[in-house]
Amino acid sequence: MKVMKFGGTSVGSAQRIQAVAGLIKDAGKNIVVLSAMSGTTNTLVEIAGYLYNRNTEGFKDVMSGLKAKYRATVDELLSTPEAKKKAWDYLQGIFSYINSFTREYFSTTEEKAILAQGELMSTYMMTCYLQETGINAVLLPALEFMKLDINGEPDQDYIRTRLAAVLKENDNADLYITQGFICTNIKDEIDNLQRGGSDYSASLIGAAVDAEEIQIWTDIDGMHNNDPRVVDKTSAVRHLHFEEAAELAYFGAKILHPTCIQPAKYANIPVRLLNTMQPDAPGTLIDNVSERGSIKAVAAKDNIAAIKIKSSRMLLAYGFLRKVFEIFESYQTSIDMIATSEVGVSVTIDNTKHLNEIIHDLKKYGSVTVDLDMCIICVVGDMDWSNLGFESKAMDAMKDIPVRMVSFGGSNYNISFLVKEEDKKRALQSLSKCLFDNA
Image (cartoon, rainbow, N blue to C red; front, side):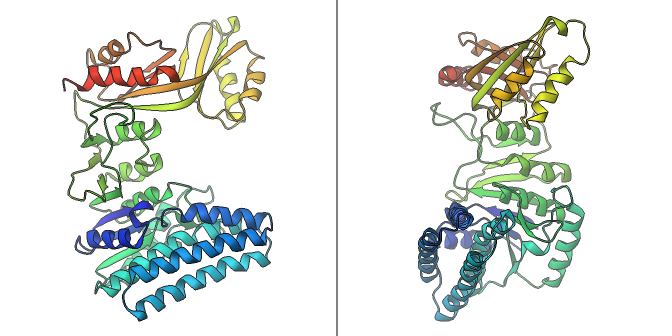
């Protein structure tokens, strides 16, 4: 059994839903995870905003547009009056449910319930279409098996047990359809896995059923070895180790949500990134197999701030770094890169919401300087320290670029450079030329 996940753009219209149905109906007895139709979640966020502010007029206006969109989609998607009525009656029930919140106290709990409706609508329409075309497709409500534990993390034991039971109850089905993103929490309230959570859902489901493969279908041809907006003649990377994929996802490759990787990695289930527009393309396979002696890709992360703390008190002292890190922890600000010397430490952050407060607190321990508008360039591949010359290839490519920081050795798959954003394009182009042109 495979798990096949399709994002919002893949089911963004009646035609796209039909195209996805064509991909999944003959692929085997698989579990298909769907996001909401593209634009729907943003619309539901807007609706929640009006409900928070008790703006009935704005609420009604946006709801009217949402209903019209789905009415048109149902009319185009389905052929028979019976199927159209069945689907529209279900959607009308959802719209009535959303309308009911105009008469109630509104909080984040109610907002999460509203945000879940997009996935419920897309999966129901897909199931109706498949059934109309003669496929014995069964809708598996994610709210019946996808659950968060007391810490707000997926309860993987519960998910495995409940999903096995639900699948056993529907063993005669040809195909299973379920929702990504949505779940329930420890209080049995509707909750979610945050934005990008459909990838996470697919990975959790794949791990729970010990899937043969997890497929993430988008409208992009896998991960590329560089940013095609900056570098000409980029190519898709056909194979990545899970650690390499995690590095690329974190440092700017938007095709795969970083949290998606972990459940699949630990369960040793390969993840394949595929393109709905080019379904015959091989895509990118991600697994636990390393390719020795290979540099795979370069990625970049913008809007970075670099902070340097210099203090003679750091010399031969212990506890200094702990005090520095506790300041970032107190403001829930994660650190990307770090470099130390005998009397100083430099770190980078990508969240500057509390930058002023952090600087103020750091000044208790030394002089502080900040560089804004920085960029992290990350080279990903087999960067084990025993591979002589690999880091020098990347360093040689950066010889004409002013580099603020270098991070090497924290991972066997990454060497990172901190540069000014204005030097980003030149750095990416130089790295591409040195690392890939003769590959």
